Image 1 (cartoon, rainbow, N blue to C red):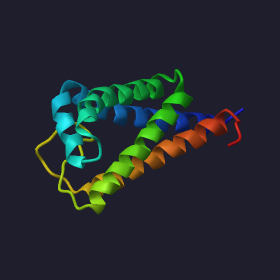
Image 2: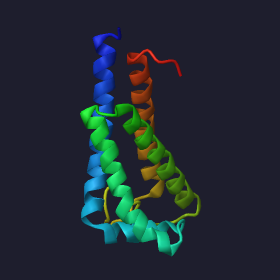
Image 3: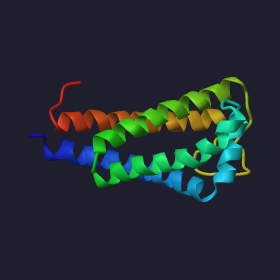
Image 4: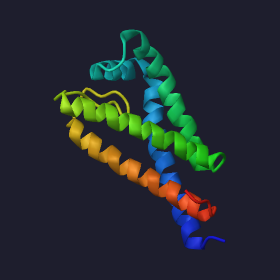
Length: 145
């Protein structure tokens, strides 16, 4: 049986990640057109998919967040949010490499421009937190990776 410390550390990491993803999803759910504008600035998706992504992606984030916060299907939630973080990091890296001066759109639409590199580093920290949560979860459940 896993120690109480491992159990609580895993919960705290999972809950923190869930709150981050919920905080990111809600403003985008409430303003899909603003989020669509942010997505279009990356110039990675065809125009026909921008609106679809702006509507679907925040709900996927919210489902992942709720799985992490509730513990119901937590392993799936961890897989989902870590996969999303990898995609977000790839998009941010692409924007950073191309020198785009855009709002990342990570926590909703904003007219303010932040350095994409800083958003990349922040999201990299979120991915580390997500991978820590996975490691602790599997350690808690005694599953070998």
